[in-house]
Amino acid sequence: MLASRVPLSTPVALFVFNRPAQTQQVFARIRAARPKRLFLAADGARDERERARCDEVRAIVSRVDWDCEVRRNYSDVNLGCATRIASAVSWVFESCDDAIFLEDDTLPSASFFPFCEAILERYRDDQRVMHVAGNNFQGGHVRGPYSYFFSRYTHIWGWATWRRAWKHYDFGMSAWPEFRQQGLMRSVCDDAYEASYWSGEFDRMATDSLAYNDWGLQWMFACWSRSGLAVHPQVNLVANVGFGPEATHTTSAPDFAQVPAMEMPAVVHSPFVVRSREADTYTFDHVFGGASRRRHAAVRMMARASGIARKRVRRLFVR
Image 1 (cartoon, rainbow, N blue to C red):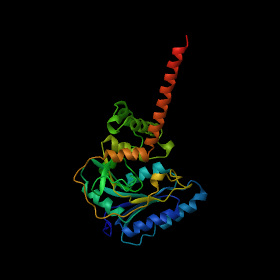
Image 2: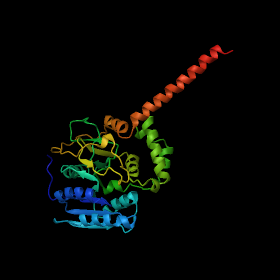
Image 3: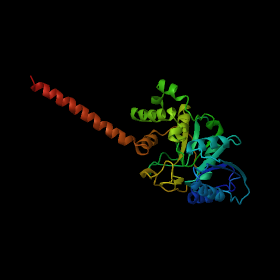
Image 4: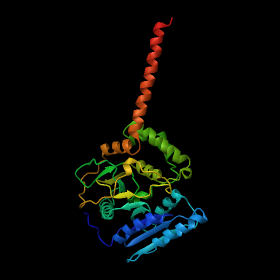
């Protein structure tokens, strides 16, 4: 198993809200890693009935029983998931150069922390690399002989990055209209289906980011707009334990997400910085529904062709 340096030198940030059971699990994993610096950000309750659960969560994360610098950013009002997390990441980077980020439902393995720390150190000054993911949704497919591969996709169920990368984040995606107008999505994506799908998603977010209560798409666009790469581990290092009716986005677990957090051996670094096209095609097809979209498009095309053929046949027999 990948050995963690205890205490952990890299700052860790934990974003919490109103789920005590999940928070308890995640905080226990952080306690085991014993980071020297811990950033805690919490959203405010939406009503009085919710306040008790929010207070319970804050009590759980107050139990820091190791030598640690703790900083807190607790909102008295409900900001919503998108604004709370985006503003909290920016707050963290006001005082550190890199950090590891977890939410109250992202349960890491012990290997997650040293993996992130190793990648943050190796690519600290490499502007090509902007994101470190804790997830692997490749369905058991191994992408090369090293401990990780490079992707365009910025999975955020446990992740890490640098201040030098986050400075490109723009919640309102003000650069998107020009990016789209110049046709740059075809330079980013491998096929027209992928470019069309993400163009639609970015259109939606740029029109009204707050209405969709999301912050992750803006981060992915920030990385894509800089040709930024994400590092993905060869095994999944973070499990999402937050699926259910209380979740903001993950109310039910898709098939790709039902994978446990695993341990990994010592990190074997890649001597190359090259994106895996196979991995990204798999991600689009199986995580974001690209395969289904292609099938539906093929069916529509066949139906259209069949309709045209029938019309031509009728013309042959109708005088």
